[in-house]
Image (cartoon, rainbow, N blue to C red; front, side, top):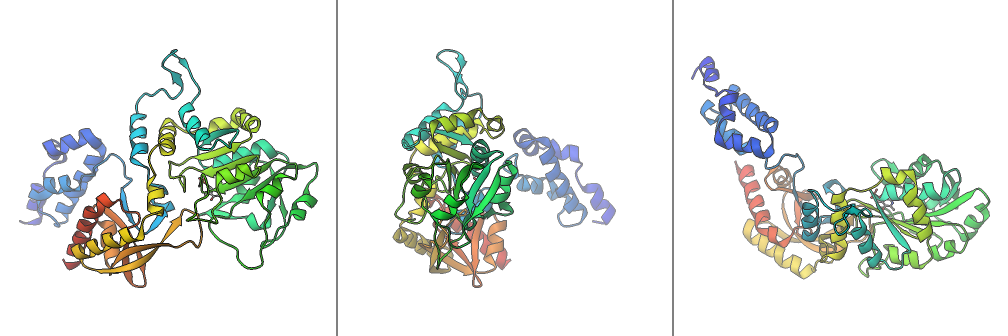
Length: 431
Ligand SMILES: *Cc1c(COP(=O)(O)O)cnc(C)c1O
């Protein structure tokens, strides 16, 4: 076909959109997105990369499944809380709860009386039941919001005592001292980078002190000649104490002996404990504030509370995370290495590659230095790109010139689609 003929033969946009497969897709994911896919297919035909007669079929193949661009990923990195992959994977119970809450829902309404009711009361009840040590609890948008609210309420226009060993950057560009400063509180640094003693705090205490803040530096560990002051000792200094435990671990876990937990911090006398909902707690993005009931009542009435409040979907997923079965986070964290080894052997049998040991990690800025013993299938390095670009999208680890497919964070019922994804990647690499 000559170039002008080819161009004339390319179906027009309106004709393509009338194709029943494409018009059905427009009903499901929206006309603009379908039009985009159609235009891209027409362009391929104009460029001579596909035949004019293939435009409709090509567009149908390229249709996205959903009206949004977030792509589900099989996490083959072995990192349980991968921040770039959305931290905690929700449990089936949490997914069900948030789907059910997606329409109209009694989030702030009592169906028995027909009157307004306390917002998110079910989630708060579940949180109080999970941590009866706490006088009261509050759920906000994320860990950073929890910390902002707690500091604002206890130290606006006052000083926050913070150890120099805890002046940390938590994630890309998020520096804790900057966040505190943004609340109007002034940070008073105490101690040194490696050592801070009780006297460093007590010497700095005066009438300007609003509170003491203790932050668990969750993404690094200082080793060697170090000292820090325990929560219990700080609590006895007679000023409000905020403890930011970060990961949201509810109680001690023998697997992570150095990871701080909310129950212990409350037991040791923290006025307020703050934490994230989507790290070790395994829920949706949320921030928790727990502790002294009178202080939390003040937080609840602070104007900022309204700006930091969570939506019905978060409340639904969070409650189900607490009351439902073990979260994927807990399951992956505690995965039995022998089971992972058997799954890796089965996968290697299906797709080739080498069964290798693989150290998993907690991730998400938690339990730095902890290596979780696990197993993986090692493939040639080129697989990593092909796996990411495939469907389903698989994100693996590239290590010493190999692609390492770690099974820790793959739901076992996805093992077959993982194998198929690897086989498809092999075909693209061969082709
Ligand atoms: C992760 C973390 C935060 C921030 O929590 P987000 O939920 O990400 O806002 C604050 N403090 C500590 C110690 C953390 O580990």
